[in-house]
Length: 291
Image (cartoon, rainbow, N blue to C red; front, side, top):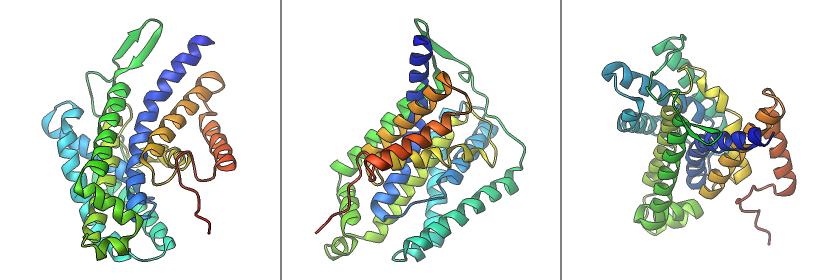
């Protein structure tokens, strides 16, 4: 039982790294634009397909595709923002929800139209590789994904806190009207924030291609869990997305390993209910300001 607990704990932390990276992208968009992007899972699918295209063309390991995926996802996000998101700036929350939900189905069906419904794989020499430490096994693809998450989250933290662009993004997130009066180009800031969020979703897709088949519905496995991680951590907070992702990964792995393979999502949902009851704004979310 002790071995199962610690092995599940290790697996949960590593799996939580992908949830955290995915959640940080959602959090950046919400934090700056006050918009929950419900098309993030479909964006993850396109990150997987861009990785598959890179492998098909070059035959190189999927991790060499990171620059290619960043460029492709950046271009995709720019088109989505200009054509779909930008006209909705200033609209109510319902419009964003409906449009991003519709965008999610559009991107998913577009992927099926372009690439077909048949599962595709991206072979990797480290796909089944593990690091053995004592009695415990650490999957190498998940370990790489975890460290990639740490590097990218640290990069975003430095961007937000140590650069002029980061200060502009934080100012825009607080009071867009005041930020614009101070000379900040809020539309440009919104564009960059949205692009970063979409790129993070695409990189998340790249990092899981050694672990899963590439299909138009591959993002569905994150549709609930990733958003629960963001809610548990607190919408709009980078630390919250990181902690929430790791917490969800650990809970899911512990319940799966120690109770039943089918009850992992149930454990995550129960954790969500407990957090919402005790702290509705999440671990690091800000409560409603009262007069």
